[in-house]
Amino acid sequence: MVTAQPAPGAMLHSRFFSSREVAVHNSMGDLWVSFLGKVYDLSLLTQQFKGDILLKPILEAAGKDISHWFDENHQD
Image 1: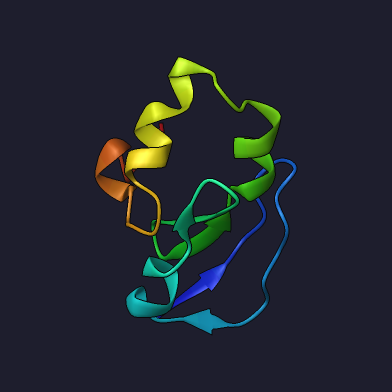
Image 2: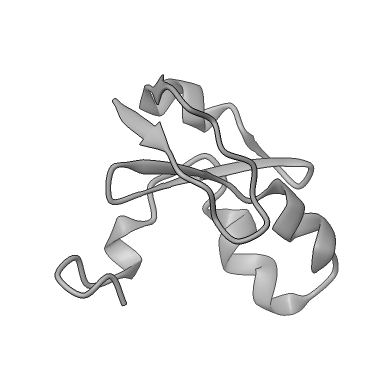
């Protein structure tokens, strides 16, 4: 279970989510990811940068955990 946190420009969901619940948010218009035990709604980000090639890794990670992308100690 993870709790949702706002990303810049993202909506906050203030409850706990299972990985199964996060997984259903896996499309361009409804994209969530989990990161270090928190859930981020990146739907607004995908709309803002629609068509940008740099968005591709995020789209491929839709509905999944992306913690392995970052250093847990520094969150870089």
